Image (cartoon, rainbow, N blue to C red):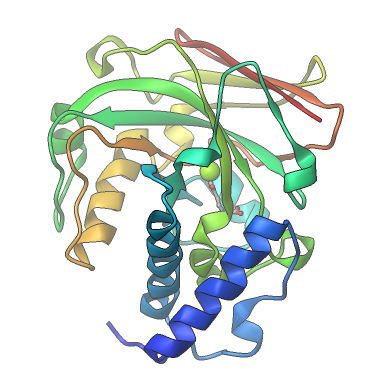
Length: 264
Ligand code: OOG
Ligand code: MG
């Protein structure tokens, strides 16, 4: 894997992007000043942000895949799935409030999440292994908040910014993968009582379990893996929806209940 950044540059970029997250402040794309940055550099920055949070006492409570559906790729103008991590303070209870004063320009995404019961390792991880290693699936809504101006970025910049991660809400109804057809599982996204997006699980790489397999394969490039008991969000099924104070969101998942939140 090719790299162009020194350890000092990685640390400086992690400080820059994490401060922007914590202060809810927009910054310009990191590739503007460092156009030669590679994927490996960008993931080095993301892992350094993760290390800083853990050093400060935050716990990592899950992983996410992003840009796994055509709707999301087309919306953001990029064509490669990426991953990020979820810290403990990103989690908001179902029916809870998202405090917009701590965010820049939040958007929501309907996602299916997996919880594993066995480790998954790449390379070569596939859907069959993912299904065998799945404890259960749960419905989730991710709130993303790119730290970049106008929510515009390139792939390298968004990887360094922990894939725009900021908040997530997990629904309370879980299911066994054997009892669901995750490809035809329908989702209906409602904002202030109106349907704004509809979709089905197959929008995510043909089957949401493919997204988990891809995560295992991407992690293997860094000699990392998915331990048993990991919560993994597989990526937005539809395009993301912009939200503002006063909005309420409900996403209905076929056979899995609904997930709601209010923005204040
Ligand atoms: C990047 C993160 C995308 C998803 O589910 O596709 C993502 C972004 O669009 O800001 O979380
Ligand atoms: Mg997402």
